[in-house]
Image (cartoon, rainbow, N blue to C red; front, side, top):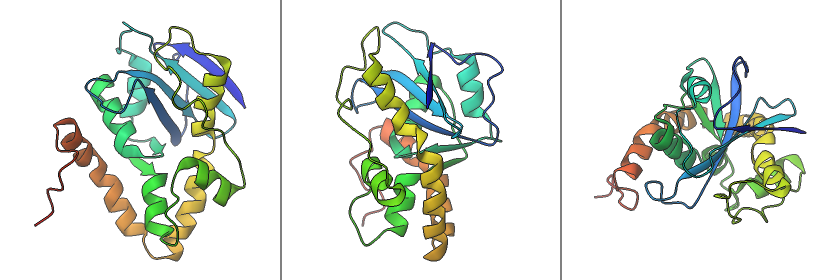
Length: 204
């Protein structure tokens, strides 16, 4: 795996063909308060691009925003509900169409309650990944080598996970409901951003 570090935006003319795996890092989980600090992306072919937003950085990022808004490029997330929302809030983008490996796992792997990225990599790909840097300080001016490696590992396996989970969805006859869930993510994220994250509006 080769890691490419970029500050504030992707380089021009960088292509991701038909799909890109994406993850984000932030100062916490409350989007309006906890700023976006890193976006990591990969085409699934071994290279990972990290776009770092240190404190007081501009979120203009025209090349990154163009990619995220490109409707010809599928975005693969793990837990798209958070990543889509924080990208929309800080970069003002609509990162669709999308595929969420956590939703796909919950719909197809009903025999387990283990749907985290680490569990999926281990159980479906036989790969062990470390999560030790997850709670490190992502707001630092300079990222450590360990942080960059951690960030890259969070996206580098998503294409393979998507392929494995698509087979399970197909086997269980749940492809159509998964697609419907993926299409609903933007609305669910808008509810989160507007403060409805703890309320089930579909409940009686």
